[in-house]
Image (cartoon, rainbow, N blue to C red; front, side, top):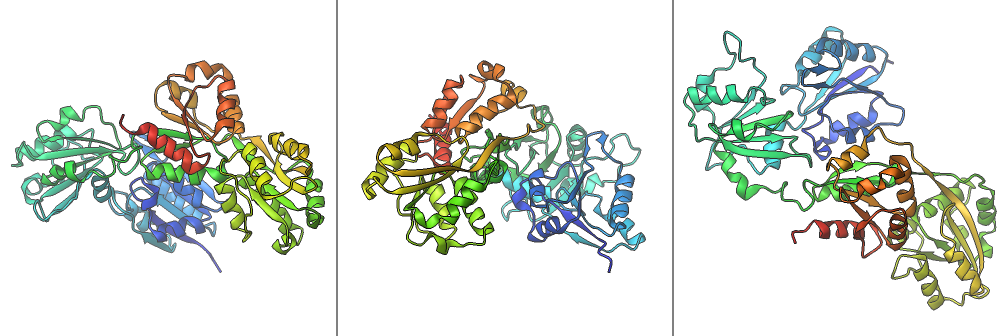
Length: 506
């Protein structure tokens, strides 16, 4: 039975959260994803690990492939008995040439479905505080291409009718032709004082909105570059009251997250929620230890331990993953008490339906020792510490000094991630990056190794560094970085709160 199927999917205007449920399902089931320039690449994280990505973006005059070549590519891949998801910005049928692609598929007898997407003409003004219709302003709304060649002998747009016959006008990709558009509207009866908004990179944290009138907007928007959409009409006046997105506390801030790929999303999502533009720049990767035997031996003899002490969520996952791989389950831990260094680690433990018996008020090794002293007689107790290969020696040494019998073993390794294809140093020096975040000492060390320690002095003054806790801060300062933002609670939510506090109006 043939699997050939093409999904023409609208990915929405930029915010990855605006994809439809069905659109997301098509990304997840695809063998091949063919995507455009305006598709937010964060959506691609939802694809299967073995998916083939093909970029066919068109940016200004630079086309990766012409439309006819894209049509041929979609057909070719579908005929390989593959599920193809053709991911397009906005909606496939609103100035997206999806109709052309669908006709080619029909001609080649390839089954297809079209999944509508939220189009920019609705979402972009929404994120700029502009409703496209409003009972006090207008009940009509028109979508027009801004690409029309002004040198043509005859326009395909009936300017005399749209200029005064439709309340709100949305022009797609009309920056280059903005002088022509405004001239035609005024020439055909629209008042020169009609409000106009030009919105670049709408619905993303890079959104920029310029407001004027038909007679002033060309000058006011002279520095705006594509992609942008132009909204004409009285509804633009509502922006002052309804501007909800650009007033978010981290809007306009570009923040670098250096956590591992596996853990970056949780942190990034919290920053996105407050309006930040986030660059995920993983500096560490989690790997299995060089030898799994010590961990296996500890698990086989788990009943000989009194305490299981976790100092990171990675240690939790590494331990339980190996427990299950050895054919065991949580019943093996009956009678063993569990200590977690902080709330995130505790939540990671609870995920396996294990109750935490001890958690210190401060989320550092020193506090773990003090809290254990309150709840148990450490002398003679046996402690198992499944940790990273580079974990600090303080905790096992202190427990041993107090008479505890400690098995400190490597449950996972942190290794340096492969550098991403991004010129982060130049972005920092050019003022494009506002905050770089560190969530462990290893993220600091690896960050500097990836970008080059010689750039350390150049960073200070160009960017703020944010640290999750005192040990991470100490590492950063020892390596020549000035830490401007320090979490009071040594957790990801605590670090987010510290960033929000730093961004608040003084």
